[in-house]
Amino acid sequence: MSVEVRIRPIEVKDLHHYIRWYADPEVALGAQGYTEDLNMDIVLRRHECDRAAGRLPFGIETQDGRLIGSIGVSEYSGSTGEASVVIMIGEKEFWGRGLGAQAIRLFVDKLFSEDANLRTITARIYSFNHRSVRCFLKAGFKCERVERSAAVVGGNVVDVVVMAIRRPGG
Ligand SMILES: CC(C)(COP(=O)(O)OP(=O)(O)OC[C@H]1O[C@@H](n2cnc3c(N)ncnc32)[C@H](O)[C@@H]1OP(=O)(O)O)[C@@H](O)C(=O)NCCC(=O)NCCS
Image (cartoon, rainbow, N blue to C red; front, side):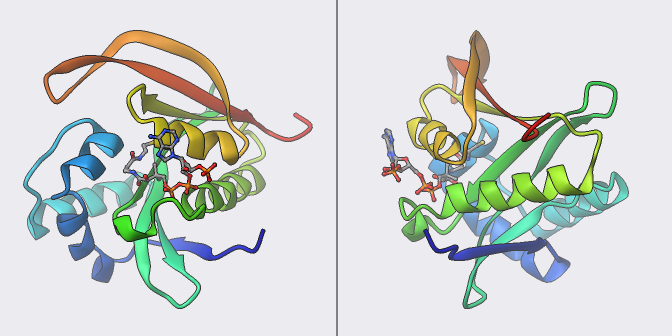
């Protein structure tokens, strides 16, 4: 399969896209479990926090340079060698074309190649998010466990599917 997306660090000039992307409840609930009214002050502050923590997300862009979403590390533990990732394709017309799975593969390869201590990459996915579960499966993740009633999304208690991929040969 040809790779149709690439990943590169998110820059300040990209941040205004988040305001539109997260205004869509399906995007916001799938990615973070709640909706919110974002503005430039908030996204800039979060960007600075991510930068300070050395955890800037990566933009997902098409080969012709259109930014369609982002992918990043939400949790990292050096002691267990585990990182957790979150992906979001905010431009919904690009859903269902295999681009999410491609971006995950690119990001997973990058994380493993840049951090020799990293053993396992996980994703925590709300159980209603079948599209995301399927996307991570295609990217090589396996279902590890289901955490019952582990989150509240839009006022409903939901299960969380924990998916994982291990360092190849590790
Ligand atoms: C999750 C997300 C990244 C997937 O991106 P994508 O580019 O659509 O993913 P892909 O096309 O690679 O894979 C999606 C798969 O789900 C399948 N799918 C779509 N709706 C589905 C459903 N209701 N049930 C089961 N599978 C479904 C698609 O058919 C596709 O599988 P296929 O290629 O075998 O046909 C994107 O939908 C998104 O950003 N959602 C909002 C944020 C989010 O939920 N993030 C996940 C948090 S970790």
